[in-house]
Amino acid sequence: MGIIGGTLGYNILKRLSPNGNNSSMDGSVYIGKSKLATLLGPKIWDEVVGKVVIDFGCGEGSEAIEIAQHGARKVIGLDIQENFLEIGRARAVQEGLSGKCIYELKSDEKADLITAIDSFEHFNDPSSILTTMSQLVKPSGCILVAFGPTWYHPLGGHLFSVFPWAHLIFTEKALIRWRSDFKTDGATRFCEVAGGLNQMTIARFEKIVASSPFRFSEFETVPIRKLAAVSNRLTREFTTAIVRCKLVLR
Image (cartoon, rainbow, N blue to C red; front, side):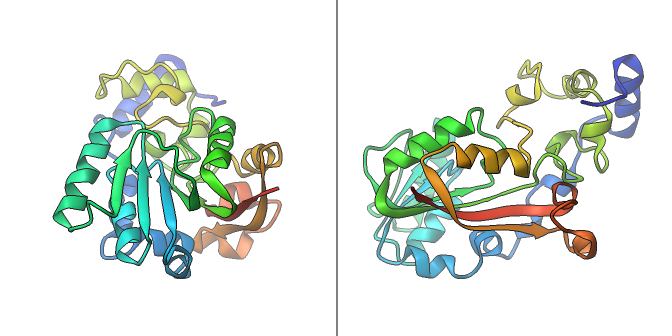
């Protein structure tokens, strides 16, 4: 995908953003707000009370702490990056929740509820993630998912979205070459960048779930506020801010 590549594409990107600054993706939109309640709605707090909850892809653990503070019986934060887990453990100690909120690379405990926030657009193999989740949730349990921006969103390229839909206009090679000027991880593809970027679309996510051990109990595409008037089934790939849903075992 992308039509502007080579040296031309690289030079344009370099001129537009020499250091890859993208303040629109820095998380500042959640300052003073609960990310969980913003993405999943305030009903999330009723869902967690008294339950064993796994925060899948917990990152530095802020949401796991918040879930524990809202009455969950136990919260397990799972992530593949040990440095993030260490930050989460320190936060749990600081908040007096070290016995209630734990952080691990993997778990054998089955949960009543699994949350997955801003992660399905990053998983390298989302199909296998759903299989893993099916082994971690109780038969009566569910998965609450919220993620975005999806790939065709104006900022669906995350760091690569120098301007709206830039990640669709420039080729992957040009974008990666530009990124390598200020990132040193050696990534050569979108999926290899820090955190991963799997080019998840809404249609692809629906297809992945359809082939998984889960089915949709609830499904919603939340439109970009300024594009709500033109958001519909035909335009949703380009006008959706986030996807949120509840998954239950078949």
